[in-house]
Amino acid sequence: MQQASLCFLIRENQGEKELLLAMKKKGFGVGKWNGVGGKFDINKGDKHIFDTAVRETREETGIEVKNIKKSAILNFYFPYQKEWNQEVHVFISKNWKGKPKESEEMKPKWFKINKIPFEKMWSDDKFWLQRVLTGEKLKADFIFKEGESISSYDIKVINRLD
View (cartoon, rainbow, N blue to C red):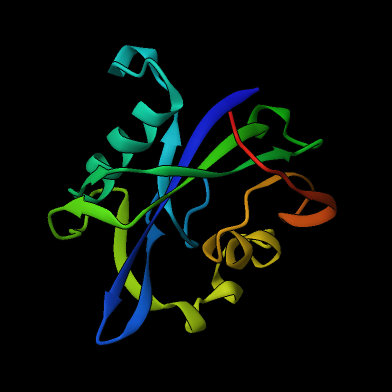
């Protein structure tokens, strides 16, 4: 299964927590808000999935993340389109350098934690994202049916992620 990363940046702004999401402008997931990330690519210097998260965040937003923490491993299955199946490693960062800027692939925007636009995101996000943002570590499986809606899912809270 293809390995991929997903990185979420969190900041304090006037006493409120905010989450950086990015609108996908092309390719897989176009038209949806999401964290930034992408596929593990040894040809781009990725030795570990952490490298992927750092590289993809830089490529898609211009941000240099530091001290990222793995928060979840999510397996996505698309029985009708098996090449989309992927194991996604989710990271959180509260420490980075730079300001988010739009790239060819993504348009970043800050959202208040209590105003995340779940209706314009992947349908699985509403089941796990808030939990990860509150510090839970998760392993989950999501099976999608055509139309990108969820057929079934299973989420487990775990103590550590390797």
